[in-house]
Image (cartoon, rainbow, N blue to C red; front, side, top):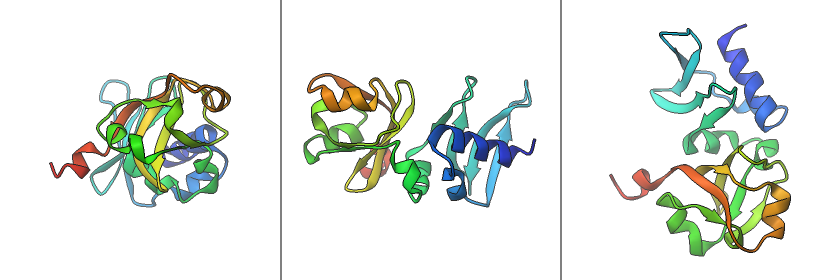
Length: 155
């Protein structure tokens, strides 16, 4: 199977049918020296995602912003309030009480882009599902894996 086709199929399976249409045309793929499997996907030397051994994708905030062009992808996202934006950008977890909107496709253990005013500010791993996030008022909803802290602080 063609490597780009494999990436597209994985995107569609994880985030919804048709999300792969937002994948840029000029991607480069790096492979593992030991196994020969796809390891990373880049666009102009900027990391888009890493393929996990369990078949999942670890997407970057940059790639999440590209995929946000798809309406289906937005159902995998979560919107937070102004109060918690600075903390989340620094890499702190998202708590249920700070969630203002939640997509219907968030699953426990899945990658979740965190939005503020329609822009991706971080990407994390879901601790709770959509239904649980909506019903709980306390506790961690998403553990942040990658955020825009390096871009905002000028480093």
